[in-house]
Image (cartoon, rainbow, N blue to C red):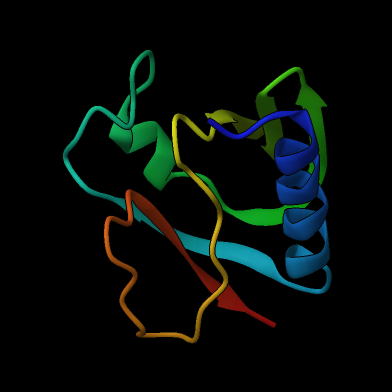
Length: 98
């Protein structure tokens, strides 16, 4: 299970990766990814990353006036990859745009 240092590294990586980029589209597989939210709400997320905070092992990510809470689970991580590249076991993805 990722511990606090790994969660903080994930937060810093997201801030760095989103610098100069905006969220233009999201997609997620039909899994237990959304425990207390709805996939449709996730799909509406757009814009630049305006805030990324860590609260314990949770990440609070804001995109304009909407946001999400993320937990890395047992073996989770955020992965930066080239557009169109597949990531095994990917639960949620974002498309990037300059």
